Length: 482
Image (cartoon, rainbow, N blue to C red; front, top):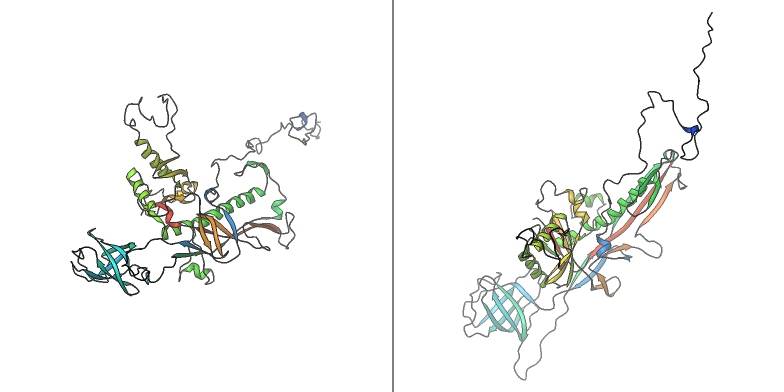
């Protein structure tokens, strides 16, 4: 009779024993798989960086500086023009009149800086014809009377005192012998600007239970660190994302308008801030054609800069489209570009050869001023500004670049109460002896070493309070469509 005892098949001659290290031994080699585990996937320990360096912050670090402020408002004064010109002046005087009364209709002008005895040039805005005259009286805050030097009197008849027919500027003065001096004096014309800081926050949280299940990943981070990370991998990315927001908030911030929903959401107090794009759009220079593609376009920009601060060196931060347009424009200046292959593209190389690798990019050029070109990742990143132009690259409002003057300027800091040298772009953050809000981070909860509450988690908090100051916005140029 057969035995009812079932004898198991012969097993391995030794038991499987896990190794403390990643070493291949007989004792930890698995040979017995079933259909549930024999097709376990191969895994890569190292995280693949398919997007390269993902951060976009670098712009303000390149062109600006950071300095503390202890107030809810930052105010500064910028110099006005040294010389006087009015572009919206009208008169009712007839042609050939030997004297005429002019009224200044320029916006925001409450009194004219024109005095008796000064000599002025008066030009018709439509015709370009001009007269020269001496001021004989200033009867009101916005009117002045002149006597013309020309025997023919007023060259172009006026159409009414309230119109904007003439441009007037002062070029000197003239007095009779034995007369008193100039009546009255002029005060320096300053423009007062201000901005307010905004509070920027972020947070990363992980519960205590997940912290007990450690999974390791080898990473190389954007700041150059390498090694193994577990749950703090996400914390690290939160930190990088927050640092990007510290810059992009300064670029894109706008003030909350009266009656806006944002103003209500912020409790009715003044909300928002004046970011770089907002300021340059408001009181800077705007190139509305998207990208200047010819020297004539750049000559127009240079002519505009001549009328502003005439800063010698400027950096143009560009998206890929504007970068290529500048490269193509400069390449076309080479006389051999349209020639044969053996002759073409000789710029920048003294011993050019058709078989040489050719650099088709330019880092800068000089046309009246020095312009240095720098790619701006923020304008190319598809998750930021670079993703707004995919559907229509020429859509109205698409920003293609920003011209920033290099160096610093002197302003009167109303908080400090004295003149100070400041970069054209710089960040002011709230700080005092007791509190520094430039970049705060702290841990709360009851996990990961924290013991501040009964929350079974670790929360990493981030906070900053800051504003950007755009000094001399008249020296900046924003390139955009529309």
